Length: 464
Image (cartoon, rainbow, N blue to C red; front, side):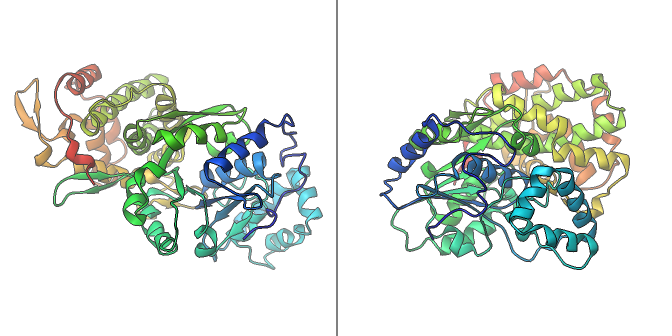
């Protein structure tokens, strides 16, 4: 399992041409984490990213860029399923990208890998997603070449001895894949540490309503204790992060792991802080995808009206705050990276893109929520999960203005409208504007006050 990581071109130059720091601080971070895991000399710290979507691939590539030169101390790999073919149109576009980047072209020629892309463009050869990922091309992000990666398609080989596992899967696939992974960990003496990047939730309605987050899915599937499972999230557009746009994030979970991992993951352009409120951050990660779809619809239907988008932002964030108060007694405030993550997702994420395309009629709901070139649109399943959970009468709260018991979803008109558009398909995308322009809609501040002043916390929603 040891050996050098495939794809390291030059230990002194990153794939994008930048030169890493040589002041020793990078190696010190590796050594600190190795000590924490009790690694002996000659036994590399093994990190594997499970899932090769845009963010998972970029996350693995960032680690490879930063630490890949320390081959004897750390090993970074990524798992993705084998057999996914690249269609002709994508192969032709990939060839254009390669030839537009001299550094990438030279690298492929040097690795004797260029010819297969010529053949793929001509239709003389079928390219596969795992094959091109080894050369640094993520199928969901062809326009942003990454550094070469060590790709593994055999799950057992990828995870059986991993020290750190990065969950780069969609939330809709997390449970199933980690159930498979658990079969390979039965003989382990020590638990690995898992960092989940997934943003989405599932709802269970029986025997009582509850929410299941990706970290809980992993805990249930593997038996790994929650103190070894963390969540990382922030305002991160994958392609921009890899191109070294300044960004920040929070890693949330038990103090034992979150603080040293925050130091390890921090880079000059990617600042990672740590936080103990796993629940709020993970739930917000799912909620922002819900409301991003609506944001995309509003942008498309109003010709990018700044006024309309800001009105939508005020209402959707108040619903998000209200929902988190149902799930946590003292949730983290919607500020800092939490607010920034919401903002950037509403502004540019794939869920906002999906909402825009729906509203413009360029895609339709019959195409499903896995879109070519974009991957899984996790907001669709999250709309269904949050609506069905919050519509349960067993969760009724007292409406302070009407003095009657109502289901929590009754105080979330945007969520209700998104459910009717995306799940029931009763109304068109224009319905989102009807919700915003409803003259009976209350000031969003009132919804926040209900959440903060009244006892709406329902601890049963997050019980195991």
